[in-house]
Image 1 (cartoon, protein in one colour):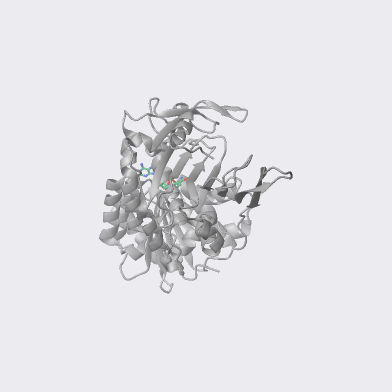
Image 2 (image 1 turned 60 degrees about the vertical axis):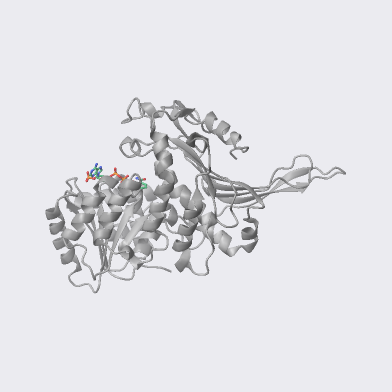
Length: 480
Ligand SMILES: NC(=O)c1ccc[n+]([C@@H]2O[C@H](COP(=O)([O-])OP(=O)(O)OC[C@H]3O[C@@H](n4cnc5c(N)ncnc54)[C@H](OP(=O)(O)O)[C@@H]3O)[C@@H](O)[C@H]2O)c1
């Protein structure tokens, strides 16, 4: 069982922010609760907001209580005793110099501590933080250091290169941890391990047997008062460049005998994806925005009525993309990816639809394997079984398992943080992976941003835009 065994200092940039409160503090508390942290560690929150240490500890405690419902107050009090706050500007090297003094004070009697800098700020400030970490000697070569960078790294290929170059100026690649939190989810890692542990399943994953693959990440939440985060990004940029492509890679990558090669194999798989040839990018990509509608009995606003959204915003809240792959065993299998907000149902799912049944008969449906990662999680194999009578008639037979995590289950950020402290980069993205993903996504992103590209609409609470149904039907399929 992995635990953080060495003393460490974690500096969290953007400590006042949404992600920190929603995910990172509860994840760290979980590690404390499960006794996975060493005796000697310190967590320093850094942000511009003025706050005393006590106010910061209070903010952390409240975010943990909010997330967990019930907490062990004794463990929580011990946990926050390791925390302090440093108010500063991300672009002011002097604020980093005083931070360095604080860190050295904490580490005075520690043997070979690991330092981690976690960038949980908007991407615009990444380069200033990286620069100052080096100029202030918080990062010193020769000492163990990890810099953890939240996705998206940049907002397109060009801005990614700026961040990458800044990282490379000062950090070795083995010190850089590019984080896509989907890769910390047990259910997502399980896409790979289901194949690894089940040769029967793996044998079925073959282009001669598969009709097409659907990867869907559907949310019923809207933008939850976070227009500042969502408006510059949109669903396509937020979901496809990282999460959805990674799910496609875990499904199609070559299985390796050792986890050591997982990263390399994931990259190979990513490089095999390409945009299928088409007359226009509209044939392979589609975008839409939600209009006012009903979530159950509740009337809800459309995207343009959300607080902080420009009244004429053309940002997408739904997108779909067709992809092809040259990965061996998968060549020729069409992939359809989609993601959207304010939909009827929350569900993250991979569906593999197999070719039409050879036995003709009434009520036959193609075989299908659903791997449902979020929502009503589970794995479902859809087969057919004969009903009684002299005619070959069939009814569906569904084999299913709820795919609940058993054993040492940790929240995604807790698992990734433990691995980062231990120096294991397997489930973090490499530079080459992020680069490859942006190269694939960039032309589509540029196309979607054009004024002339259609932006369809769908009512909040619906199953999605009618245009997306028509779009996939043109390819001879339907969303499942
Ligand atoms: N929230 C999520 O669910 C989520 C999910 C996946 C990835 N991410 C990524 O994680 C990172 C942090 O996300 P977040 O949602 O926590 O962001 P956030 O709440 O908007 O920002 C985090 C903190 O950064 C500072 N900040 C905000 N805007 C700034 C600006 N324009 N210039 C300088 N500082 C600014 C603020 O702190 P001060 O004003 O106190 O300095 C804020 O509390 C982002 O890169 C995001 O893309 C977030």
